[in-house]
Structure formats: structure tokens, C-alpha cells
Length: 287
Image (tube, rainbow, N blue to C red):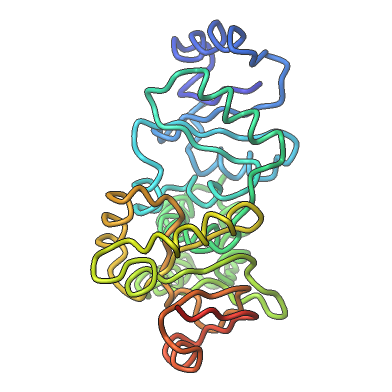
């Protein structure tokens, strides 16, 4: 087990190390436990460095903990939010009973959590805005520059050579940063799996939750990722979902322009939906 906090041997780490074995989580168990609330973590590493490091770790489940709600971290583009919808990643809001943490750990290692690649792609849009700021900052460090250039090319297609001059790199990154990053990458020849359900007019009609649609989503969620989406105001609709206890991830339809998805549930006719959003489905259910 690895606990990522503001430093090794801190009171928080020691408390976890003493308490977790009581609930069946031993030091030798495969688990990465990460405090999502701290910008600088162990050895003065920033959250971005930690995320890059653990993102490639497919051997151990990862649990993030925070005193904030997962939805709020997602909406503000927290660097960890791009990982929350992986099948081996969990989130727990603090304060929490350690028994809850053990229950979440058991759920992750059981393989029963269904990954949601569409939600992962959408929340990475917010993360990208933060990454651009970090690239601009770290470019001036000679030690960090090779990693900065590698990431700039991989994530944004930005290439730079010494003879271009330092201002040229800044100009390229600032140009991207000033443009809205609003669409996920099209996956040519691939389909975003799962069910994509509209909110206004479909899941909610005249401000009332349609229980039969929600029940259909619950049945789908047993075997497929379920994503809610809207062409409206994400924050306002998120408030409505939270108030109704609906916990599926919410994304913008406009972010998926040009994409193919598996199943769509919507109140529009299929032709009207495709014309308006330029999203294509393998199966379309009009309600």
C-alpha cells in the first residue's frame, strides 16, 4: 500500500497506517491512496507529477480522498478528475468511516466497476486547460523543459526547437489556451460504449423525474457505463440531479460532436438529434 500525502511520515499517513489494518487493509496490499486536496504532495511533487506517475500503474487500484465532493472537483477541472471513471479508480469523500474505504477497495479489486471512457474523455477537457498553464510555467525551468516539450507535443501537437526562440513556444501555448477546448478527440473507427441519456425532456419532463427512464438506466448500469448529457447549462442541471439523488456523470452533448456512441435515449427524433448535435449512435431510443 502506498499513501500519497504532503510527505512521508506525516500524522495523516501514520494514522492511516495504524488504523487501516484493523479494517483489513494491510501494508502489503496493492493500493494507492491519494489526498486530492493537496497541490504539493510527497517530496514536493505537484499533483500533476503524481497523476502522471500513477496513471500508468495498472497493477494497483487507486483511491482518491477529499473533503470536497467528486462533482465539484470534476467541474473545476481537478487534475485527478480524468482518472475517476477508470475501472480501477475510486473516490471517497471525507470524513468517512474506514469501513467504507475497505468496501470501496473490495469493489475495485473485484473488477465489478465499469469504466466510462466518455466521462473520462469529457473531464479531461477541463484538465487540459490547467495543463496548459503548467506547461507555460515549467517551460522556463531547464530541468523540466524536456518533459514539458514531450507533453506539449503529445497532448497538443506543439513542437519547438531552440532556434524558434522561447517566445515562440509561449505564443503557441497561449494561442491554444485562449481558444476554448470544447470537444473530445474523435475516435475514428471506434465507438464510445454505453448508454447516453438526455436530461431535459427525457429523464426530467416538466421538472419531474421520470422514474421509468431512471429504472431503465439502473438496469443498463449493471452491464454498461451510463452517461447523462445535455445541450443546456451543466451547472444548473447538475444541481437538479444532485437534488434528485441521480449520480451518473453529466457531460455536454456539444463536446461529442462528430463522435459515435453505442446507445442514445432522447426525446428528439433520431434525424433531428443527429442534425442538431452531429452525434451518431448504433442504437437510438426515442421516449
